[in-house]
Image (cartoon, rainbow, N blue to C red; front, side, top):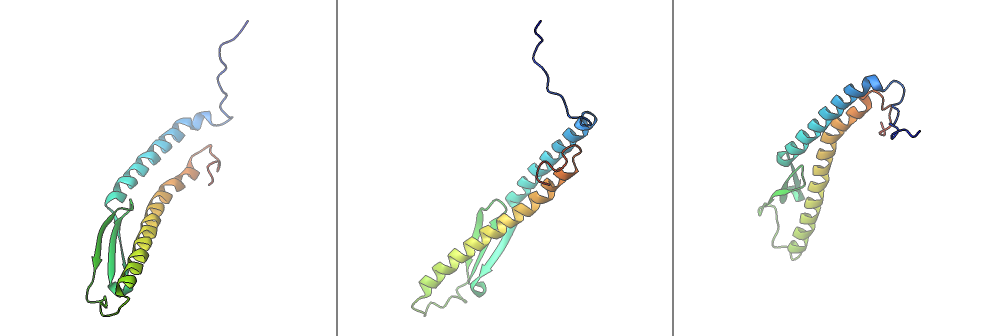
Length: 126
């Protein structure tokens, strides 16, 4: 006599914690979604070259503004265009790095909660 498909057995001790674990995972998912939404408007401001260039970037790595301060840029120097280009590259790269660090710190605080979910026992790298 053949039996129907066999259901996977839940590890000992996890059955009682499954509801709590699912609630915590749902809350974590909601928190992550809120953090992602907040990062759309949260900004980082980076300035290079003694204030020659200032960049404002969101937590989603979207540049909102680039401001040049003509009082700090020495246009009498024959290399001023090359210097300006180098500063722009440095400013954009720094802004992206700081924006990524901001996003990582916001998400890390939420993902750190994975260690507190009963039954996972550090399975997710915690």
